[in-house]
Image (cartoon, rainbow, N blue to C red):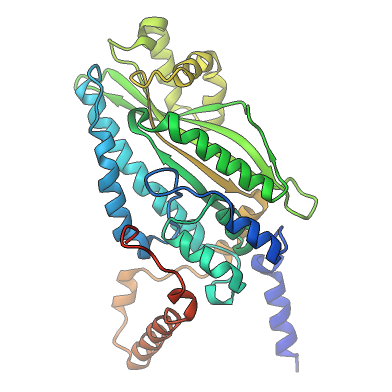
Length: 365
């Protein structure tokens, strides 16, 4: 008769989770350095939370607070573009929260967070509410096996606060990279991409939602590989209406060529945009906020090897039952009791001392 324990161990050892090893070895010295690193706030460059459920109410308040920035519309912005700025700002705000939550949920290590090293517990709770520093989030991503995690975010519609806060955010990220022995590039080459074209009632293009990506640093993986990538991504709206400077510079024919790039794939976009990159960079770097309208800048850390392991883990996991399929089952008293027992365990877990240790002021709630 086969040894079931040995067979089970062999199966477990073949799963993607068992192939993941954190790059950084936890020590009191490292934890102390990470905890002392600079951090942003919700009104500056505080990162998006990675737990949508527990932070949802708080994020609604944050969005309401940040909405005042969208209402400061410069005089020469067309109303159609202004409405698009607000819509884009809202959509990208919630998209960041959803993406962060998904990446956190699909982590490879410590599905039960209480099993993680106790020195990480407070950092994890801070991250769930969007109050962790770039350094803390980099450590959390590594220790929990998260494929990608946002570590800083500055919302700046129409460039509001960008001059004062973006340099501070970049220095905070740089400090975090240095804590882990990584490398930071002060002058990375930008790559541009197109997300969406805004058209007026007649179908004429008037603006394009674009992104600028810069690989600003790398973190060692501890295993001789390429390491994790620290990437800064900015979203902005490039005006191409009749009153825009870009249309004045290039003329209608080249603007039509510019707009056509939006229908291409990511790699082809980057190649075709090269002839426009210098002009776009000048608008952004010279703070021409009424022509290239900034929306937000985020910095995130990702690792390609971790991403592969997460994707493989998702392929091996059983497909979750949909709500319709769940309620199609006849009532099963034993199953109902099992669900209740799970809920009871969750409630008991949140009574653990680690959750009592995180205290927020009235301003944080």
